[in-house]
Length: 184
Image 1 (spheres, rainbow, N blue to C red):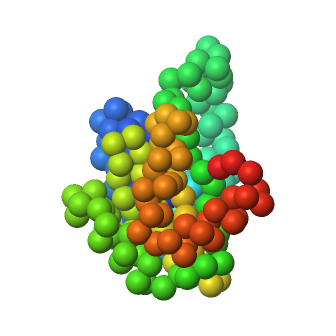
Image 2: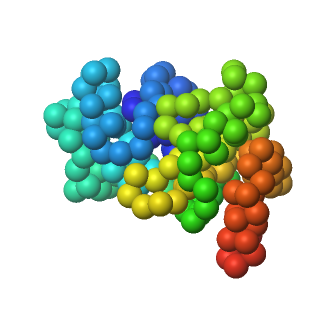
């Protein structure tokens, strides 16, 4: 299953637990669909809610997805049991900062962590023991997009601080952003 870089680790873990192979890819319809074709992947998914199917020529189809989910829910004893089977992770929405969005910011973050923990597929993603952090330069507007995830809610703040510490200007802009909006 091809998953966009912003997808929760939960998606990767569930795909693996079902015997599948999660394949991370850049965010975006074109990238997901092209990677599916190259890999002949059965499924693809984006955080934006687009789901792609090999059986539909690698196309995404919201109605097909809705009907498929209706079928899955109708065969379950209880919807709450389906939900309980999915692990809970704590993920922020996209945080779009009007800040320094130069490639140098991404390079500074990447350089601050062991290479084995850094992914440069789309921006810079750093893997932590209890989660991950991602920074990407937006392709649609002059912003830096951030996203953070942890397996435990109390670990999220540590991930944010560690990830942003190599880029004080971005950290300052993030702190101002958060002071206006409250907690993550």
